[in-house]
Length: 149
Image (cartoon, rainbow, N blue to C red):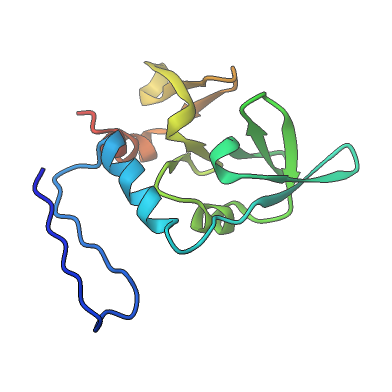
C-alpha cells in the first residue's frame, strides 16, 4: 500500500483520505484507530440487575431489540439494557459495527462464523455464543463490509 503524509501548520486538525476498493479488516482497524486519535470513544451506559455499568464499545459484541427493550451483549455474554434507540447507538459506534437486520447491530471483530439459513437469511454466531440472523435486506451490505462476494 502506498502512503502519503503531508505536514503543514495550516492544518487545524488531522484529516485523512483513503482511496480503497474495499474495507479489509486491517483497513477497518486503521480507520478506527485514526478516528479515535483525538477522541476517546465514550463508554455506553447500560443497566443490569438494577445497576448501571459502563461498557467500552470494543467490548460490545451485539446490540438488538428484544421485545420492547434495546439490549446488548458483551464478550462474556452478559446481557445489558440500553436506554438509547438502536439508530442512535449505530451512529455512536465505529466502523467495526454493521447492521445485519432492522433490529440488530453486530461488532464484526466478534463474529465466530456465518452459515446459510432459510429463505435467503444467514445465521450469524458470535464468539460469545449469541446467535442472530442476517436478513436478506442487509446481506449485501454485510458481505461488502467483510470483503466477501
